Length: 424
Image (cartoon, rainbow, N blue to C red):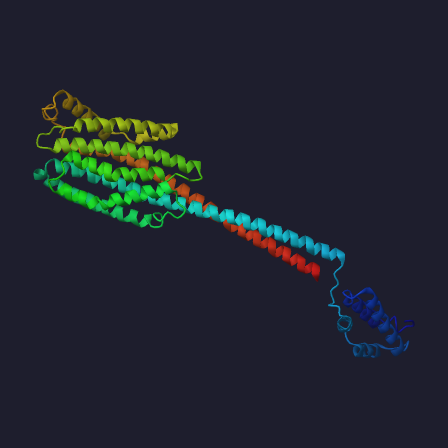
Protein backbone atom coordinates (compact mmCIF):
# COMPACT_ATOMS: atom_id res chain seq x y z
CA UNK A 1 0.00 0.00 0.00
CA UNK A 2 1.46 3.39 -1.01
CA UNK A 3 0.46 6.98 -0.76
CA UNK A 4 -0.50 9.15 2.15
CA UNK A 5 -3.63 7.09 2.97
CA UNK A 6 -1.50 4.03 3.78
CA UNK A 7 0.57 6.14 6.14
CA UNK A 8 -2.46 7.44 8.01
CA UNK A 9 -2.06 6.98 11.75
CA UNK A 10 -5.41 5.18 12.08
CA UNK A 11 -4.36 2.68 9.45
CA UNK A 12 -1.02 2.09 11.13
CA UNK A 13 -2.67 1.50 14.49
CA UNK A 14 -5.21 -0.84 12.93
CA UNK A 15 -2.53 -2.94 11.22
CA UNK A 16 -0.49 -3.15 14.45
CA UNK A 17 -3.54 -4.44 16.30
CA UNK A 18 -4.15 -6.91 13.50
CA UNK A 19 -0.57 -8.21 13.75
CA UNK A 20 -0.96 -8.71 17.47
CA UNK A 21 -4.29 -10.50 17.07
CA UNK A 22 -2.85 -12.88 14.48
CA UNK A 23 0.05 -14.15 16.60
CA UNK A 24 -1.70 -17.42 17.18
CA UNK A 25 -2.29 -18.03 13.44
CA UNK A 26 0.10 -19.89 11.18
CA UNK A 27 2.62 -17.47 9.61
CA UNK A 28 1.44 -18.02 6.03
CA UNK A 29 -2.21 -17.43 6.93
CA UNK A 30 -1.35 -14.29 8.92
CA UNK A 31 0.71 -12.91 6.05
CA UNK A 32 -2.08 -13.59 3.55
CA UNK A 33 -4.73 -11.92 5.73
CA UNK A 34 -2.57 -8.85 6.22
CA UNK A 35 -1.98 -8.54 2.49
CA UNK A 36 -5.70 -8.77 1.85
CA UNK A 37 -6.51 -6.05 4.38
CA UNK A 38 -3.72 -3.83 3.09
CA UNK A 39 -4.91 -4.20 -0.53
CA UNK A 40 -8.52 -3.49 0.43
CA UNK A 41 -7.55 -0.32 2.26
CA UNK A 42 -5.40 0.82 -0.71
CA UNK A 43 -8.41 0.49 -3.00
CA UNK A 44 -10.94 1.99 -0.58
CA UNK A 45 -9.02 5.01 0.65
CA UNK A 46 -8.02 7.97 -1.51
CA UNK A 47 -4.58 9.49 -0.83
CA UNK A 48 -6.10 12.54 0.85
CA UNK A 49 -8.63 10.64 3.03
CA UNK A 50 -9.47 12.39 6.27
CA UNK A 51 -9.81 10.92 9.75
CA UNK A 52 -13.57 10.46 9.54
CA UNK A 53 -13.37 8.69 6.20
CA UNK A 54 -10.55 6.38 7.34
CA UNK A 55 -12.38 5.57 10.56
CA UNK A 56 -15.56 4.71 8.64
CA UNK A 57 -13.71 2.32 6.29
CA UNK A 58 -11.93 0.62 9.21
CA UNK A 59 -15.23 0.31 11.10
CA UNK A 60 -16.82 -1.50 8.16
CA UNK A 61 -13.88 -3.95 8.13
CA UNK A 62 -14.48 -4.93 11.77
CA UNK A 63 -12.08 -5.15 14.67
CA UNK A 64 -8.65 -6.78 14.15
CA UNK A 65 -9.49 -9.35 16.84
CA UNK A 66 -12.69 -10.40 15.02
CA UNK A 67 -10.84 -10.70 11.70
CA UNK A 68 -8.13 -12.88 13.30
CA UNK A 69 -10.73 -15.05 15.04
CA UNK A 70 -12.71 -15.55 11.79
CA UNK A 71 -9.52 -16.47 9.98
CA UNK A 72 -8.60 -18.99 12.70
CA UNK A 73 -12.08 -20.54 12.67
CA UNK A 74 -12.04 -20.85 8.91
CA UNK A 75 -8.72 -22.69 8.97
CA UNK A 76 -9.55 -24.86 12.02
CA UNK A 77 -6.97 -23.10 14.23
CA UNK A 78 -7.85 -22.42 17.89
CA UNK A 79 -6.00 -19.17 17.87
CA UNK A 80 -3.18 -20.56 20.09
CA UNK A 81 -0.08 -21.86 18.48
CA UNK A 82 2.09 -24.32 20.43
CA UNK A 83 5.64 -23.83 19.39
CA UNK A 84 8.24 -26.48 20.34
CA UNK A 85 9.64 -24.19 23.02
CA UNK A 86 6.19 -23.81 24.60
CA UNK A 87 5.63 -27.54 24.53
CA UNK A 88 8.94 -28.07 26.30
CA UNK A 89 8.13 -25.46 28.96
CA UNK A 90 4.69 -26.93 29.66
CA UNK A 91 6.18 -30.44 29.84
CA UNK A 92 8.87 -29.33 32.29
CA UNK A 93 6.30 -27.57 34.46
CA UNK A 94 4.10 -30.67 34.43
CA UNK A 95 6.99 -32.88 35.54
CA UNK A 96 7.91 -30.45 38.31
CA UNK A 97 4.29 -30.33 39.45
CA UNK A 98 4.07 -34.13 39.62
CA UNK A 99 7.35 -34.36 41.56
CA UNK A 100 6.24 -31.63 43.96
CA UNK A 101 2.90 -33.35 44.50
CA UNK A 102 4.52 -36.73 45.19
CA UNK A 103 7.19 -35.36 47.52
CA UNK A 104 4.66 -33.16 49.27
CA UNK A 105 2.31 -36.10 49.74
CA UNK A 106 5.12 -38.22 51.22
CA UNK A 107 6.15 -35.49 53.64
CA UNK A 108 2.54 -34.80 54.59
CA UNK A 109 2.09 -38.53 55.25
CA UNK A 110 5.15 -38.53 57.53
CA UNK A 111 3.94 -35.39 59.31
CA UNK A 112 0.50 -36.93 59.81
CA UNK A 113 2.16 -40.01 61.31
CA UNK A 114 4.23 -37.87 63.67
CA UNK A 115 1.18 -35.86 64.69
CA UNK A 116 -0.76 -39.02 65.51
CA UNK A 117 2.19 -40.60 67.36
CA UNK A 118 2.90 -37.56 69.49
CA UNK A 119 -0.83 -37.17 70.05
CA UNK A 120 -0.84 -40.64 71.63
CA UNK A 121 2.19 -39.71 73.75
CA UNK A 122 0.39 -36.58 74.92
CA UNK A 123 -2.69 -38.62 75.84
CA UNK A 124 -0.56 -41.11 77.78
CA UNK A 125 1.17 -38.27 79.64
CA UNK A 126 -2.18 -36.82 80.68
CA UNK A 127 -3.41 -40.26 81.71
CA UNK A 128 -0.22 -40.88 83.68
CA UNK A 129 -0.69 -37.60 85.57
CA UNK A 130 -4.08 -38.90 86.67
CA UNK A 131 -2.61 -42.29 87.63
CA UNK A 132 0.07 -40.64 89.78
CA UNK A 133 -2.63 -38.71 91.66
CA UNK A 134 -4.48 -42.00 92.08
CA UNK A 135 -1.36 -43.70 93.47
CA UNK A 136 -0.90 -40.95 96.03
CA UNK A 137 -4.54 -41.18 97.09
CA UNK A 138 -4.28 -44.97 97.37
CA UNK A 139 -1.18 -44.68 99.55
CA UNK A 140 -3.02 -42.42 101.99
CA UNK A 141 -6.06 -44.69 102.00
CA UNK A 142 -3.91 -47.78 102.54
CA UNK A 143 -1.97 -46.31 105.45
CA UNK A 144 -5.07 -45.01 107.24
CA UNK A 145 -6.79 -48.34 106.59
CA UNK A 146 -3.86 -50.16 108.23
CA UNK A 147 -4.13 -47.97 111.33
CA UNK A 148 -7.88 -48.52 111.43
CA UNK A 149 -7.53 -52.30 111.06
CA UNK A 150 -4.93 -52.41 113.86
CA UNK A 151 -7.62 -51.65 116.45
CA UNK A 152 -11.10 -51.39 114.95
CA UNK A 153 -12.73 -51.04 118.34
CA UNK A 154 -10.70 -47.97 119.28
CA UNK A 155 -10.23 -46.35 115.88
CA UNK A 156 -13.20 -43.99 115.93
CA UNK A 157 -10.90 -41.03 115.34
CA UNK A 158 -9.80 -42.54 112.02
CA UNK A 159 -13.31 -43.03 110.61
CA UNK A 160 -13.58 -39.48 109.28
CA UNK A 161 -10.07 -39.26 107.76
CA UNK A 162 -10.43 -42.72 106.23
CA UNK A 163 -13.78 -41.82 104.66
CA UNK A 164 -12.26 -38.63 103.22
CA UNK A 165 -9.28 -40.60 101.88
CA UNK A 166 -11.62 -43.06 100.20
CA UNK A 167 -13.60 -40.23 98.62
CA UNK A 168 -10.39 -38.72 97.25
CA UNK A 169 -9.38 -42.08 95.82
CA UNK A 170 -12.79 -42.59 94.22
CA UNK A 171 -12.56 -39.24 92.44
CA UNK A 172 -9.09 -40.16 91.20
CA UNK A 173 -10.38 -43.53 89.96
CA UNK A 174 -13.11 -41.87 87.91
CA UNK A 175 -10.58 -39.48 86.37
CA UNK A 176 -8.29 -42.36 85.40
CA UNK A 177 -11.13 -44.33 83.83
CA UNK A 178 -12.18 -41.28 81.83
CA UNK A 179 -8.64 -40.61 80.59
CA UNK A 180 -8.16 -44.31 79.81
CA UNK A 181 -10.90 -44.24 77.17
CA UNK A 182 -9.32 -44.70 73.76
CA UNK A 183 -6.16 -46.31 75.15
CA UNK A 184 -7.61 -49.59 76.36
CA UNK A 185 -8.71 -50.42 72.81
CA UNK A 186 -5.03 -50.56 71.90
CA UNK A 187 -5.28 -48.58 68.66
CA UNK A 188 -1.69 -47.53 67.91
CA UNK A 189 -0.47 -47.81 71.51
CA UNK A 190 2.33 -50.08 72.69
CA UNK A 191 0.81 -53.51 73.49
CA UNK A 192 2.68 -53.74 76.81
CA UNK A 193 1.38 -50.32 77.87
CA UNK A 194 -2.20 -51.31 77.02
CA UNK A 195 -1.77 -54.56 78.97
CA UNK A 196 -0.51 -52.67 82.01
CA UNK A 197 -3.42 -50.23 81.80
CA UNK A 198 -5.97 -53.02 81.56
CA UNK A 199 -4.37 -54.70 84.58
CA UNK A 200 -4.72 -51.44 86.52
CA UNK A 201 -8.40 -51.15 85.61
CA UNK A 202 -9.02 -54.73 86.74
CA UNK A 203 -7.32 -53.99 90.06
CA UNK A 204 -9.46 -50.89 90.57
CA UNK A 205 -12.57 -53.03 90.21
CA UNK A 206 -11.38 -54.96 93.30
CA UNK A 207 -11.14 -51.82 95.43
CA UNK A 208 -14.70 -52.09 96.69
CA UNK A 209 -14.23 -55.58 98.12
CA UNK A 210 -10.88 -54.56 99.65
CA UNK A 211 -12.59 -51.69 101.46
CA UNK A 212 -15.31 -53.98 102.74
CA UNK A 213 -12.71 -56.32 104.21
CA UNK A 214 -10.95 -53.39 105.87
CA UNK A 215 -14.17 -52.19 107.49
CA UNK A 216 -15.00 -55.70 108.70
CA UNK A 217 -12.70 -57.79 110.86
CA UNK A 218 -11.45 -60.00 108.01
CA UNK A 219 -8.13 -58.30 107.26
CA UNK A 220 -5.45 -57.67 109.88
CA UNK A 221 -3.35 -54.55 109.38
CA UNK A 222 -0.45 -56.42 107.76
CA UNK A 223 -2.78 -57.98 105.19
CA UNK A 224 -4.40 -54.62 104.46
CA UNK A 225 -0.97 -53.25 103.57
CA UNK A 226 -0.11 -56.23 101.39
CA UNK A 227 -3.41 -56.23 99.48
CA UNK A 228 -3.39 -52.51 98.73
CA UNK A 229 0.27 -52.64 97.76
CA UNK A 230 0.32 -55.83 95.71
CA UNK A 231 -3.14 -55.75 94.15
CA UNK A 232 -3.64 -52.06 93.32
CA UNK A 233 -0.63 -49.82 93.85
CA UNK A 234 1.78 -52.16 92.06
CA UNK A 235 -0.43 -52.04 88.96
CA UNK A 236 -0.57 -48.23 89.05
CA UNK A 237 3.20 -47.82 89.38
CA UNK A 238 3.84 -50.43 86.69
CA UNK A 239 1.71 -48.46 84.25
CA UNK A 240 3.47 -45.20 85.14
CA UNK A 241 6.81 -46.79 84.35
CA UNK A 242 5.53 -48.00 80.97
CA UNK A 243 4.15 -44.76 79.49
CA UNK A 244 7.54 -43.83 78.02
CA UNK A 245 7.85 -47.06 76.05
CA UNK A 246 7.90 -46.33 72.33
CA UNK A 247 8.13 -42.54 72.78
CA UNK A 248 10.37 -41.11 70.07
CA UNK A 249 12.00 -38.58 72.41
CA UNK A 250 14.92 -39.17 74.76
CA UNK A 251 13.93 -36.38 77.18
CA UNK A 252 10.43 -37.77 77.56
CA UNK A 253 11.70 -41.30 78.12
CA UNK A 254 14.29 -40.08 80.62
CA UNK A 255 11.73 -38.16 82.68
CA UNK A 256 9.41 -41.16 82.75
CA UNK A 257 12.22 -43.42 84.00
CA UNK A 258 13.16 -40.89 86.69
CA UNK A 259 9.53 -40.57 87.77
CA UNK A 260 9.17 -44.36 87.99
CA UNK A 261 12.12 -44.56 90.38
CA UNK A 262 10.76 -41.70 92.47
CA UNK A 263 7.30 -43.26 92.68
CA UNK A 264 9.00 -46.36 94.04
CA UNK A 265 10.71 -44.26 96.71
CA UNK A 266 7.42 -42.64 97.64
CA UNK A 267 5.53 -45.92 97.84
CA UNK A 268 8.17 -47.58 100.03
CA UNK A 269 8.17 -44.58 102.38
CA UNK A 270 4.40 -44.89 102.54
CA UNK A 271 4.62 -48.62 103.33
CA UNK A 272 6.91 -47.77 106.25
CA UNK A 273 4.38 -45.18 107.38
CA UNK A 274 1.62 -47.80 107.26
CA UNK A 275 3.55 -50.54 109.10
CA UNK A 276 4.72 -48.40 112.00
CA UNK A 277 1.41 -46.51 112.17
CA UNK A 278 -0.45 -49.81 112.50
CA UNK A 279 1.98 -51.08 115.14
CA UNK A 280 1.65 -47.91 117.22
CA UNK A 281 -2.15 -47.93 116.78
CA UNK A 282 -2.49 -51.54 118.00
CA UNK A 283 -3.49 -52.24 121.61
CA UNK A 284 -0.07 -53.76 122.36
CA UNK A 285 1.80 -50.96 120.52
CA UNK A 286 4.31 -53.38 119.09
CA UNK A 287 5.08 -55.05 115.77
CA UNK A 288 3.00 -58.04 114.78
CA UNK A 289 4.40 -61.17 113.15
CA UNK A 290 6.39 -60.20 110.04
CA UNK A 291 5.83 -56.46 110.50
CA UNK A 292 9.42 -55.59 111.34
CA UNK A 293 10.63 -57.59 108.36
CA UNK A 294 8.15 -55.74 106.11
CA UNK A 295 9.38 -52.42 107.47
CA UNK A 296 13.04 -53.28 106.84
CA UNK A 297 12.31 -54.58 103.33
CA UNK A 298 10.47 -51.37 102.48
CA UNK A 299 13.44 -49.33 103.66
CA UNK A 300 15.88 -51.41 101.61
CA UNK A 301 13.69 -51.05 98.52
CA UNK A 302 13.49 -47.32 99.14
CA UNK A 303 17.28 -47.14 99.21
CA UNK A 304 17.54 -49.05 95.91
CA UNK A 305 14.90 -46.89 94.22
CA UNK A 306 16.58 -43.73 95.47
CA UNK A 307 19.86 -44.93 93.93
CA UNK A 308 18.05 -45.41 90.60
CA UNK A 309 16.62 -41.92 90.92
CA UNK A 310 20.06 -40.44 91.60
CA UNK A 311 21.53 -42.30 88.62
CA UNK A 312 18.95 -40.82 86.27
CA UNK A 313 19.29 -37.20 87.42
CA UNK A 314 21.93 -34.50 87.37
CA UNK A 315 23.53 -32.75 90.32
CA UNK A 316 21.04 -29.88 90.35
CA UNK A 317 18.08 -32.27 90.40
CA UNK A 318 19.60 -34.31 93.23
CA UNK A 319 20.18 -31.15 95.24
CA UNK A 320 16.58 -30.09 94.61
CA UNK A 321 15.38 -33.43 95.97
CA UNK A 322 17.58 -33.13 99.06
CA UNK A 323 16.44 -29.57 99.73
CA UNK A 324 12.77 -30.43 99.21
CA UNK A 325 12.70 -33.62 101.25
CA UNK A 326 14.07 -31.99 104.39
CA UNK A 327 13.04 -30.21 107.55
CA UNK A 328 12.22 -30.97 111.15
CA UNK A 329 9.42 -33.39 110.29
CA UNK A 330 11.69 -35.40 108.01
CA UNK A 331 14.42 -35.56 110.67
CA UNK A 332 11.93 -36.53 113.38
CA UNK A 333 10.46 -39.30 111.23
CA UNK A 334 13.91 -40.76 110.58
CA UNK A 335 14.74 -40.74 114.28
CA UNK A 336 11.40 -42.29 115.24
CA UNK A 337 11.77 -45.10 112.72
CA UNK A 338 15.32 -45.85 113.85
CA UNK A 339 14.17 -46.04 117.46
CA UNK A 340 11.22 -48.28 116.59
CA UNK A 341 13.43 -50.70 114.65
CA UNK A 342 15.90 -50.85 117.54
CA UNK A 343 13.12 -51.48 120.06
CA UNK A 344 11.42 -54.07 117.88
CA UNK A 345 14.68 -55.90 117.36
CA UNK A 346 16.02 -55.76 120.93
CA UNK A 347 12.73 -56.12 122.86
CA UNK A 348 10.01 -57.48 120.55
CA UNK A 349 7.71 -58.22 123.49
CA UNK A 350 7.68 -54.66 124.83
CA UNK A 351 5.64 -51.71 123.58
CA UNK A 352 7.54 -49.51 121.15
CA UNK A 353 6.72 -46.50 123.30
CA UNK A 354 8.19 -47.85 126.52
CA UNK A 355 11.35 -45.73 126.23
CA UNK A 356 9.98 -42.93 124.05
CA UNK A 357 6.84 -41.12 125.10
CA UNK A 358 6.91 -38.94 121.96
CA UNK A 359 6.77 -42.00 119.68
CA UNK A 360 3.01 -42.09 119.08
CA UNK A 361 0.87 -43.10 116.13
CA UNK A 362 -0.19 -39.49 115.60
CA UNK A 363 3.28 -37.93 115.68
CA UNK A 364 4.81 -40.67 113.54
CA UNK A 365 2.09 -40.38 110.90
CA UNK A 366 2.46 -36.59 110.77
CA UNK A 367 6.27 -36.65 110.51
CA UNK A 368 6.41 -39.39 107.87
CA UNK A 369 3.64 -37.61 105.96
CA UNK A 370 5.87 -34.53 105.82
CA UNK A 371 8.63 -36.69 104.33
CA UNK A 372 6.30 -38.22 101.76
CA UNK A 373 4.91 -34.77 100.96
CA UNK A 374 8.38 -33.57 99.94
CA UNK A 375 8.83 -36.57 97.65
CA UNK A 376 5.43 -35.92 96.10
CA UNK A 377 6.39 -32.33 95.40
CA UNK A 378 9.37 -33.52 93.38
CA UNK A 379 7.25 -36.17 91.67
CA UNK A 380 4.58 -33.64 90.74
CA UNK A 381 7.30 -31.51 89.11
CA UNK A 382 8.41 -34.48 87.01
CA UNK A 383 4.79 -35.18 86.03
CA UNK A 384 4.46 -31.57 84.88
CA UNK A 385 7.69 -31.86 82.87
CA UNK A 386 6.45 -35.01 81.16
CA UNK A 387 3.08 -33.47 80.34
CA UNK A 388 4.65 -30.25 79.04
CA UNK A 389 7.21 -32.12 76.92
CA UNK A 390 4.54 -34.33 75.37
CA UNK A 391 2.39 -31.28 74.64
CA UNK A 392 5.33 -29.44 73.02
CA UNK A 393 6.15 -32.42 70.80
CA UNK A 394 2.52 -32.67 69.69
CA UNK A 395 2.37 -28.93 69.01
CA UNK A 396 5.52 -29.05 66.86
CA UNK A 397 4.21 -32.04 64.91
CA UNK A 398 0.92 -30.26 64.20
CA UNK A 399 2.78 -27.11 63.13
CA UNK A 400 5.02 -29.09 60.74
CA UNK A 401 2.00 -30.78 59.19
CA UNK A 402 0.29 -27.44 58.63
CA UNK A 403 3.39 -25.81 57.11
CA UNK A 404 4.09 -28.74 54.80
CA UNK A 405 0.50 -28.73 53.55
CA UNK A 406 0.52 -24.97 52.91
CA UNK A 407 3.90 -24.99 51.12
CA UNK A 408 2.90 -27.94 48.93
CA UNK A 409 -0.41 -26.29 48.00
CA UNK A 410 1.22 -22.93 47.19
CA UNK A 411 3.89 -24.59 45.05
CA UNK A 412 1.31 -26.50 43.04
CA UNK A 413 -0.80 -23.37 42.54
CA UNK A 414 2.26 -21.47 41.33
CA UNK A 415 3.24 -24.19 38.86
CA UNK A 416 -0.29 -24.48 37.49
CA UNK A 417 -0.52 -20.70 37.11
CA UNK A 418 2.83 -20.60 35.32
CA UNK A 419 1.76 -23.39 32.97
CA UNK A 420 -1.45 -21.55 32.09
CA UNK A 421 0.52 -18.40 31.32
CA UNK A 422 2.82 -20.38 29.04
CA UNK A 423 -0.15 -21.78 27.12
CA UNK A 424 -1.81 -18.41 26.67
